Picture 1: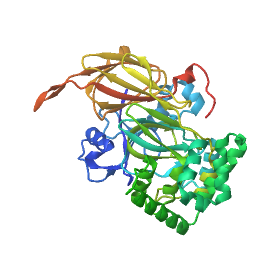
Picture 2: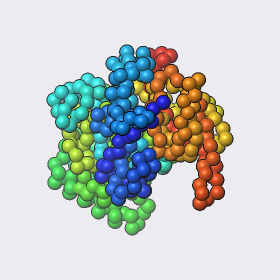
Picture 3: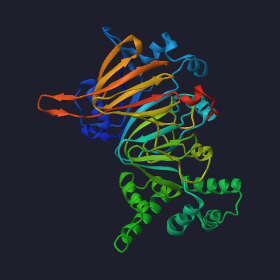
Picture 4: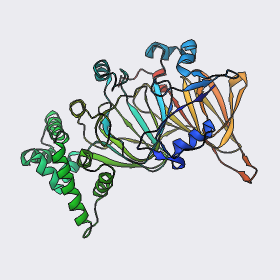
Length: 430
């Protein structure tokens, strides 16, 4: 077990100061005061854009986890060394979202390699980036394209979209709900419509968004708006005149409760809107953006890469794998996430078949590593790397505070590790 020092990203969409879970975790882990700045993401892993450091006993300076793993490849286990050439295959994060992230998608491996080779200053690595978001608080996101029926409803109720798409294309989208259109033709129709929308000139977008918002403000005086119409009003205040305000009517608007998760394969459009999550993904930072962002926009690449699959994403609620552990298993080799909740006075064993990173999210306790009796006291904010092939015992203890009575706070951990399915049967490459 190694204690990690992890990087924080201060993107402008992050929650500010003590309102941010990322900020609170970072302050507890580092001992630094929380500043009045956005704390957006905590990165736990080896990606060069935010690498974790290892605290090695009495060493005066920590070393990169990547360098430590290069010197100790056995900590990854032979399966990981063989499949991912000695690299830690996942990146673990906490996100604190105050306002919408970009309308985006992540490239598959082939496209990621091409983008990295041609634009390395924008696309930072040659890897794909399937990911999973697990809600810590009520969480909102746009994710994937609407079903044909829901898209027909959008075309019937948002006249501003029909105006900019044209009547022929609008009718083609409506006809998708008839179930008489073949799958490939349906995808081509959706691709043509979405590309047309996302490629509108800035002047047309600004004018159309203005018309939409004006109509919704007037309508709100005489009727109750739909959740997505209310969302349009909210997002327009965050990003005035942005194409994202129009594109949200093509996408599923989902709300996750704490403990629910969604996974996103390559080439799926999405945007996180509000709330806090634990997120795990393949070890990549490749993002193709087309709205809700001051960063580089690559509309042509985004629209060309999407799968145009329609329908709601699968929501995971976790599968019990022990008395105090739920596991979230996406269909990707690189990662899975466990939520471990140990009541005070109880303990549980955790096996790390592959390499793992553990975030202590709440409570205090003790983690003991197998027969070595390597014992570490842990508290909220601590992050540990645990090598492959280990068994650790996690015990929750009472929190003692001189200024308050003892509190019975469960020890709450999140563990990210290589998908255990990899060790039983080889998954198809995502």
